[in-house]
Amino acid sequence: MSNKFLSTTSAFLLSTSMLVADVPKVTVDIAPVHSLVSKVMNGVGKPDLIIPAGASPHAYQLKPSNAKSIEDADIVFWVGEDLTPWLEKGLSSLAQDASITPLLGVDGIELLSFREGALFEAHDHDDNDDHDDHDDHGKKKHDDHDDHDDHGKKKHDDHDDHDEHAHGDHDPHAWLSPQIAKVWLNVIAAKLSEADPDNAAKYFSNAKLARDNMDSLVSEVNSILDPIRDKKFVVFHDAYQYFEKDFGISASGAISLGDASDPSPARLAEIRKRVVDEAVECVLAEPQYKQGLVKAVVEGTNANTAVIDPLGVKLDSGPNLYENLIRNLATNLAKCF
Image (cartoon, rainbow, N blue to C red; front, side):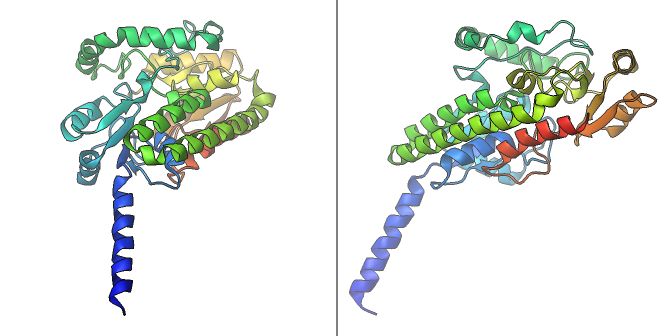
């Protein structure tokens, strides 16, 4: 073998390794957001996932491999402390040199407040129909950002109180809105491009393709939901209002107040009364939580049950998870009637 060949091969391997090294190391908190980042990074690199799809983001314990992924990261995307308040400390201590983007804090999205009470009377979706208010709402959100530290402290102080929402004032399940996901795709592409300008064109091209596919997904899901738009259903916990708002449907109530809390007997009785009095046809369970609570609500009624999943517990992580997640939500809800 000639020295010239060896020299050429070595140069090629060196240049290839340098190219790979230039791609930022990216870490993401939950599987749906990981899917969005995977779309934008397609053909360039692959992000790491902190919380597996089958684990609850509210009670997950960081593993050594997760800590190393965070420590090595150049960029971190996470929903924010409203979803995983426990992760904030880990990011602060382990990802000191990384660019960290809490996606609930970006411009151009509207955050929804938690609906209060088992039956949601205080929150009517008609109050939120004007999507043109997104920018104003986003501006207000950023004007209030200086209060974040005080709010976060109060939130942590109240974390053990199951009579209050465990994650602050805003519902953090914003990834269930394809419209918000489209905004996040742009943000993800921009952050990646700042760190890796050589691949900026690829990131933005991937983001545009993903947004176009998102529009097709929205059309598909609207077709799935069209026959059941006026049907009444109850969810296990109040995680779906972003999905509801995007697709013009509305839950009649929630069995559980929050992600990590068990409903009181009074709340169960209130939900059961609505199911009976208003002939609610569908009560939805989730794979992560107690199925017996759903059985207690529907026992002796004509309501059907189905399982829906806001995280993609049984889905393979990666670029296709997001579409499958949203599609499955719609399909399983429609099959309940």
